[in-house]
Image (cartoon, rainbow, N blue to C red; front, side, top):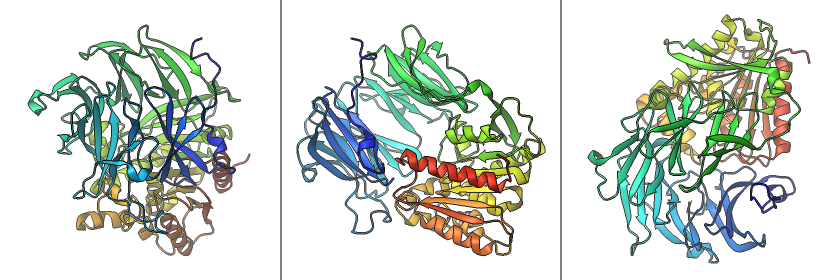
Length: 584
């Protein structure tokens, strides 16, 4: 029987992990022989994970229980005996959700033994901000150690030869001068995706026998599009690019010669394409503003895509349209923006519009499907999503144009998007809502305090809002690569100039604002939202409300049960409907 058409069996049902749905599956990894499943769980949306091991055949859990894990998967050794993972020391009592996280360590866990006996593989007591991720190569010979420094995209690569005695750790790439992502290897020939000497990224080969930079070989050169990810399947490279913030995928041979382009269903976002070098098929996901995530099987030999799994929703994607426009920012930079709405809508100044943004941490905001956005468009609204500087849509330079002393560029890009929509008669200030989450919450908070009269309603989701103390809690210190450090005078001044909490001005008329936060958020400490809400309420000179919605038994967003997602989405939509005086 074809495994793809066989009747599936439930191995792990996250819906059964807790009665209220607040325990979530965060990650999992299957041993090479397919007999064991290592999986991580998170409670109440926390970034802390606990890992377990389950027998695939019986469906029973082993005794293994690993704690105090963050930012880690599980990388199995090919003898099926255990896996590598990263963890922190156990925090002091009562500080697990607040204390800063330093001194990450890489361990090896042998199945069937207590965590106290896990083997410490690598730590750096002289580098408290370094984080470590383990990956075992497809041939099982090497342990690849990805070395990160907070959220800085520039990283290091170390490795161990698992077939040698004592397994010394070799620092292959330790200058932290670029982004290096391990793709795969042919024996000692390692392939990396990197932006070293290539702001839009390229693929290089490094031979461990001669790793000097002068011996590096370019396999896939830099092009005019941003190379986001690369995998090795069927002895070929599958390269996923961003072309004007939407996906373009190519298949190339081992010498970097193009074989074909993958025909995608339309303008949207494609991801996946994982597999082994001898596999002749791979799978990828695709979605757009009007198409929910659909899983495709891709035959690498023939180049044919077929639908493997697709959701069934009660709407017709053809009833909606998406256009892409380019507008000038304050300094003249050309910024792209997607605009989606119901077919046949003729926008004017009375049309409600929702402008959503992020702009940070080299994260690209590509076309994505959201039921709440669909409902918004069904209500007659426009959904607009600009690709702000600070993101990764146009490579390294685009990201660096929106960080540290240049962070104001991000806010200028967002404000310019709002002004463009108004000037081009898509909407007007009383009908324009803006929203963002996390770094996007900072974006909305900064724009709200800088241009309060420009917007009709504001949604500030789990935002970073006190820019002078963000580095004091949990993983906040890691964001200094994007925001800068309050301990550096020039960066302190730049942070103070736009910090939403510090720029709320008493006696100002602010638009209706809804701040959302969760009590177990140990990514962005909830005090950010509490303080900002109090300051905004105290300063408000107008009649519009400044509301805060506090979710319980939830965190920054990951792992939130469907019921809570629906409730929060409904509350946000209801807030927009009332604030913009929409008729529904």
